[in-house]
Length: 264
Image 1: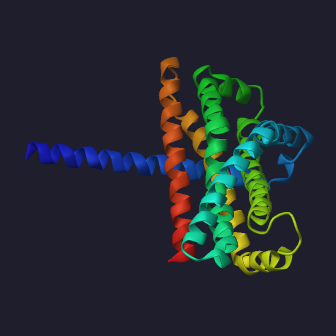
Image 2: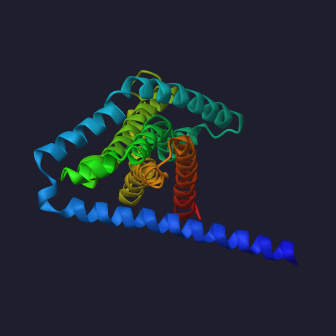
């Protein structure tokens, strides 16, 4: 009985902890959303910080990311074409390529790429600022951390993931055409018809929303995890590990919900 009671107590503590973390994240997001709507927020200083965040998150790694997307797209397209030929489904190869690669795989991998490169860095930076009392110093100097530190990171993450996922999708569409129809223009009409059939308003809006949620997850969760860090330096790696695990589960959850809404 004691072991059952201890197990239930442990489970209850975990559930309460999850609700506490979830409440803190949504509360933080609500504050950021309200600040986003305030006219005074959008001054030149805030705009400059947002531009820098987009540069560091997306532009600085663009060549590496496009190479990464090129290799993955080529491999997946080759696998799809080979499988389609084996089962006599060559006519559906272009549609399968778009649905599997452009709509699902590339946005998911883009979120993982940005999370590993920028999300972990954001988590570490915020955790160190928390430990070293830098956030308190900014607030004391009447420099709002939410406006100049956190909100630009959230906006930069969303813009970066949406943009990178879009570029990777366009690259995959080009590779798919070249792999299926070659360098000629004979397949341009059927290929564009397939694209138009798949990308109706609902699918396109869903893709943008999913990419935006990915971008929010890879910045919001690291920021809130960093703010939870106790003011002890040795807790920073623990905070980063905890934050990145939450990011991974959030990305997977967003993808699963997206698939369920689309195909079930």
